[in-house]
Image (cartoon, rainbow, N blue to C red; front, side):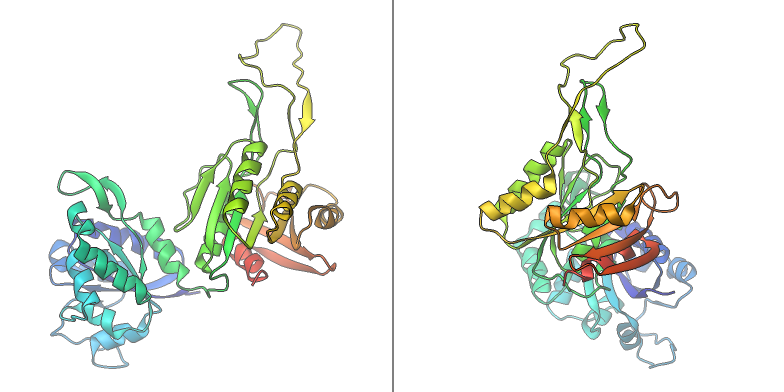
Length: 400
């Protein structure tokens, strides 16, 4: 199933290789891709390469019209075909041309002709990128609806370090994919918790759980896709930060509670999605030195209860007179529905998402999940086994 059509406009930056890496990511996500190249770009990488990798015609010469079946005007055909048009990489030259309405190469021609969603990923020397002229042009493009994937700090081709290094291929692919979703959460502030919390026993050892954070990260990514301003508060995981998401790393349950309270203080009308696997207990005492074996074959740790984070933030928001919409998760190994239902009233949830984590094909560590959404009025909706990003969309669209 093709997720959508993407035209990638490629210009002659040293970061041109990124266009091929983005292509790889898009193909794996189910997109159909065509390329438009400037004259200078095809001197760096032959159009034959782009054609071979996409099995689609490449638009690289404004004087040669391709027979694509719908019209003999190639830039119009490419413009009409695209669901998303993205310039990767974007030089200072192409940014300035598009912002000023100049169309004299395949990339700028498609840019001005298309009504598709538009993405641009700048890549250039720091001084060029920070030049007020380029910044003005980028701001103009943003005001016209272009999604700018800001460059990063890093090594540059001019043997210096600074801002201007093109964004990661995953962030660019995320930005492109985000254009395929409706802005159902535009203007909303969303906080997602993810991953496990960890409770220290001594400076070396800690207790945690099997959560990979994948469900929470999928929710944060999808909320951003759907137009929300997203903050992700996560325990220790091995996952990249989704494009456009503000990430806060925490360790313990109390750390997560503190971070959540700070977000509630800063923002109004928050939607908080508690997808983290938060530790219910912590050691009564953390030893200051590594605990050594005593030779008796036993090792005893006394535990105390951690605060119920969801209940605590509900009380905290109420004390500040702030509105809070809460969504909970119930990761259970038995009595799934009964245990989940009990949490709705106790925690003040709008609804709860229940999933069976003892199954090997979903839940902890898996890219897939199967959940039951239980509403306050008792209604239940089952979302069959799907990729976690699809599950995230189904959960979030119920918050519109």
